[in-house]
Length: 120
Image (tube, rainbow, N blue to C red):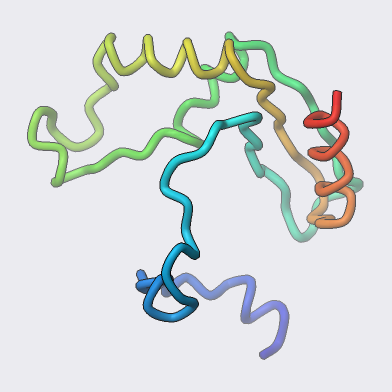
């Protein structure tokens, strides 16, 4: 498939990974060691990595917060997150490094940057 067409492909499917790859393929529990926000672009310039402070990370909440929309029965779609949920995100972004990746898509550089953060 042409890389540009593949990049633009938006149709996604949920699959049963255990059924395809075997039981135990997916670990449903893990310790989070970093949060990486991918804001890169195919047409961007060089890859840039910024380590965000908690306040800056919370300003980008819409990137990593999942709005359940119609499935969130306690709130109308698009409504702001309740204070208790925001408190949970504050704890999260204070507990782990938050990296913001901008610029050009570069998987090799991304792996190196994340590995360096996790090693340090």
